[in-house]
Length: 312
Image 1 (tube, rainbow, N blue to C red):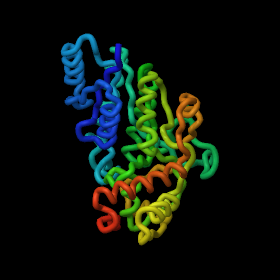
Image 2: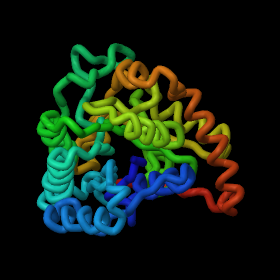
Image 3: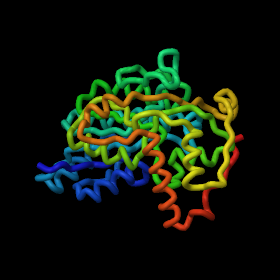
Image 4: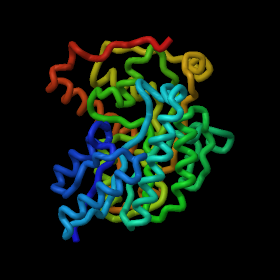
């Protein structure tokens, strides 16, 4: 029986859209769900209808790329807590529970922004493990994600991927690079990050192999904001400049705190010994090379590159 995928959050979502493109390129059979994750009965009915339309090829995998992060950033969630719970908690648990009942593999793009450096986990030291309990609740967004990850641990068909500061090869508004390029000032702290070009194809391998449990879904290593912007300056915009400020200064212009951490990569790499996951510095350099080529092809480089917008 071939794998058949149902994609949630793919109609308008950034990561979901990229997953759909990968599935198309790989000629996989998939459906894009119409139902919202929080509407349990609607989602069940949709799965039943799709299975009835092709009974010899029922859905075997559900990929959940739905989630509320807020626009333009997670500060939105501070003023929209009910809406955040509806998708990030109720919807997420609905999907996991339905998949558990029906023995469907459930791949969830979650977040690693549920940790912050502490006395045991210092900058340049050991990373947080998959077994570690979240210690960052400084934003309502992260709070909901931390609570849900704990609850999801009881579901045996769920694979939870801790994505961090996702990066693409373009200037999408959701791209971490695009965000910090537009900031008036940036903090300079090493962080684990997820280069989507590297890791989204790997997530589909994990789904094929029906891996379950929690995985720190980042490139190995940690890279600082300054290192990212230096590569952006080197390859994309030589005229770009930036200024740093402290976490304390940043806190004065934000509604919610921000997570900074390094996640350990050993479990992910060990689970996929035949798959190469590039180290973050090497990967980021290739991101910028591809980004310049993509922007030039789109007519954005060099005249229409993003301009800085003040946060305060």
